[in-house]
Amino acid sequence: MVKIGFVYLDGIYLIPHFIGSAAELHKEPGIQVDILTNEMEHEFLFNTLKEYDLPASMVKKLPTYLYKKIAYKIQGRKKPSNQYIIKKNMKVFLDYDILVFTVFNNKRIKRKGRHPKYVFLMHGAGDSNFPFEPEHKEVIEEFCLVTTPGQKVNDLFAKMGDFSQTKFEICGYQKLDFVQKNRKKQDLFDNDNPIVMYNPHFSEKVNSFYKYGMQILDFFYRHPSYNFIFAPHMNLFNTYSRHALPRDMIPEKYMQAKNILVDFGSEKSIDMTYTGSADIYIGDVSSQIYEFLLEKPKPAIFIDVHKIRERKNNFFKHFELGKVVENIDNLKELLETSEVWQQEYEEKQRKAIAYTFDINPQKTSSKRVAEAILELIDTGQKSVK
Image (cartoon, rainbow, N blue to C red):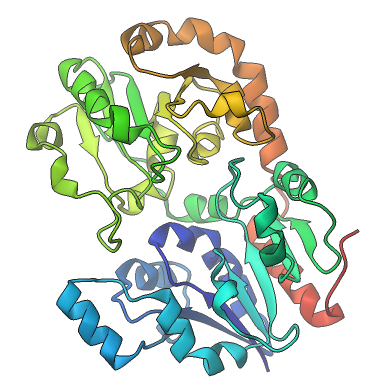
């Protein structure tokens, strides 16, 4: 029996990036697939398992130390530390033949040699500097296999240097399979006004919300001819994080406005409901810009508070796909003229989507990821071609 463990210790936004391949591998004879997670409730995870006809027994809840549980209760902390979960359950992790990650939790596991084998599933399809900076090369080299959504991500990894023990396999965007299976078409507003989505990143070093977020909310409160979705990366207001912003900082008048929808991190914020419904995108560096453009070209506005463009590096190439501003002084004009200036970006957007996502209509991305993992079992570790 080959044991494959999907390591899931973080937010629900990661589930669409691994659940499909876990389901495909579960079908295979002679393979045990588990989802290794913390002791939280995981309502969304269990509901998703039902959608895929997967048994709840796949979920293995890993405990942390008793003294840490007591400390968390005193501190009012809801999410246990990944560090202590891994430390306490080290033998559990090492009992698997393959461990599959969507974030770099592999750094904390002290394995012997190359066992268990590590697989990394890219979540998101952006072009920010993380995880492509040189300091992450050592972490990436721990993986036998890295699955990517398309050629763009492969090229970004190639710029980091040579990898002798890591294979980079283009498998398409696994989240699309999840969306097609789970997302249901729905009317978010009771009118046909244009829908604008604001999707700031969570990192204060690159995002636009800390400087302009409240002004943007107020703009749309004063301009009800636009419907407005405020759907930031869920880590910006994540109640499980000590560094997150408090949700009650958003005034109640915005929460109650008929033309404003505020979502701090529900299922709709991760299943492309908003990116698929929005007519115009406002953001900074989130990879969701590529999900927004997946179905067709549409106007995008990027607020570059930190003058990232001036760095002139290989990252944040999505700034070429729409209007880039350093403030919101001309937001009204940009919105009113979006149909005009969007023509300049349509062909660039089409090319960027083709470069970012390798979609195979004959085979799902989940199946492609599963096959790549199965190949590790059949042939052992591979070198990059």
